Amino acid sequence: MRKVFHFFILLVTAVFTTLTIPAVSGSQVLINEFLADPARDWDGDGVTNFRDDEWIEIINGGEAAVDLDGLYLADGDGEIVWRYGFTGSLAPGAVRIVFGSDSRVWEEANGYPIYGLSLNNAGDRLSLYRVSGTDTLLVDSYVYEDMAADDDRSVGRDERHLGTWVIFDAYNPCSERCVPAGAGCIPTPGQTNGCITSTRLESWGSIKRIYID
Image (cartoon, rainbow, N blue to C red; front, side):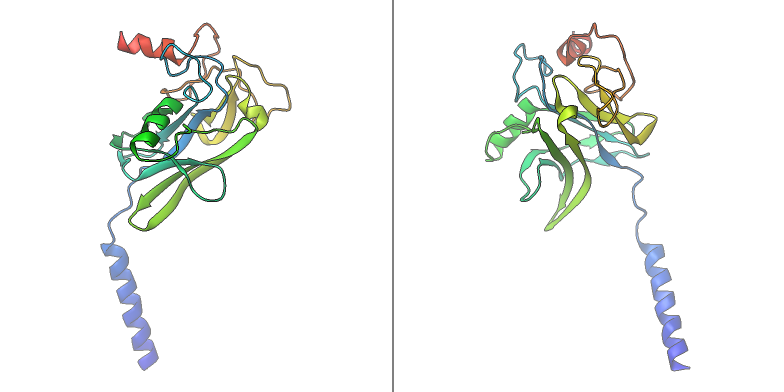
């Protein structure tokens, strides 16, 4: 009888604890698109630079705004080296773009070696972490190979199916051996990953000027 009573107490306690835990936010921040081997002026500063024109984009794939404070980008395996720390918030469905030039400024301001995003053209691992106190939680990661890092090819999620990745290869068409497959679309930094097949757009700099001017 004591065992039954003890089990009942534990069950009630577990149910009460579950009911009193705040609901987890529907927000889900993910790596959305990146470009590791720039051959044009993607950050729009008037200069093409292999370090500054790399970029990584994140997306809030959830249904609620999310606080970005405590989110960090890193690359490679082994010891974690932070490349960029986010601040502010991100609305549902919105994206945030980080260029290598942004990373370089952040590294310098926070006392880190100044490498930029440091995306390896031979293949690399991108990781997104959330740091809270002494806890470091891996939020999302993606491993790419060298074919995904050829000149002006970006890799991104299919906006209709966020679990599916494609190469945005309009500027540098893929062969049938590309992994993931080429989509024939231009890279879309700072925008959701719709497919634009025209290659008339020169770079993100030209796109950015449309909204700034």
